[in-house]
Image (cartoon, rainbow over all chains, first blue to last red; front, side, top):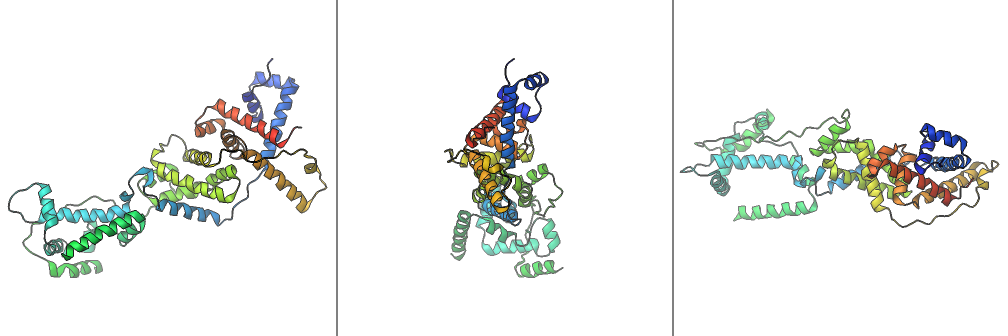
Length: 184
Length: 216
């Protein structure tokens, strides 16, 4: 009968050799020797332990991972880095304001939503504030929150902190443009 | 209410009249903290994909030890193992959406870590040395620090021998020997068949025997 193949030698090490081949092994001295040699190497390999890191290390590793992920330009699963909730919440509030402006600005004749949006964004700053004041002037905080008009306290700060340096530079550039526009 | 008063005070001077206002509400979900303690891996993955960082933190916390151990067995030192562990989790974060839940999260993380190790660990053969005689390790009279030193020398020789194995053999040996992983799971992780996994395991042991001069 043929000697054990490499697969069968591994099965023998694992103790799952099929019965017919086990009968061969029981009677075959060369195969027994091979199994014994492999078992000895396996034992010695298994005996090599791994130094245990300090208990404090695990938290340190978590921190390292967190920091590295914070520096990642993309969200989990490859989505856009801008689409993180801490960023989305203030953006959603801003979008709400713009949409409210678009709807609220008086216009002489029916126009398309695009035109309304453009007109709204071009409306004088004071009018915009007046309109927003009209919107929220008599609204208490809970109502504003339930209407989605507010964001969590500190959300904007956290959003900015989570931006990558490139994103922060772009934000700075946009803010400067808006400041210059407001001054002019 | 304090907040309501503040809002009224802040906006009161600018209130205008005569406007027709339609409020359109965006449905942005509230960002409330979630309790990740009792959550299973699948729920944590789903929450992570939704952008819940605390959920991914929990995944890291649960699996960091295993990932580190795989990496350590590949490179044999703490610094590199630490770097590889970090990279494994960053790659897991990037690729989380590709995790379909067909295997356990731990298996998927093993795969990520092994791939990181296989890609990063140099393909070149590390210097190895053959132990010509094992007699001195069998001397039971050697005790205390000297015995410990000799044991550590031998362990270092085994680590070096493992490091010198071809990558697939090394990965198979590590997963099988130190993580007690079934051949089928190793095959899943390495993207090979059970037969190939067993062959790799056999050749890994045979090569170790040769390198370590462990002929009985």
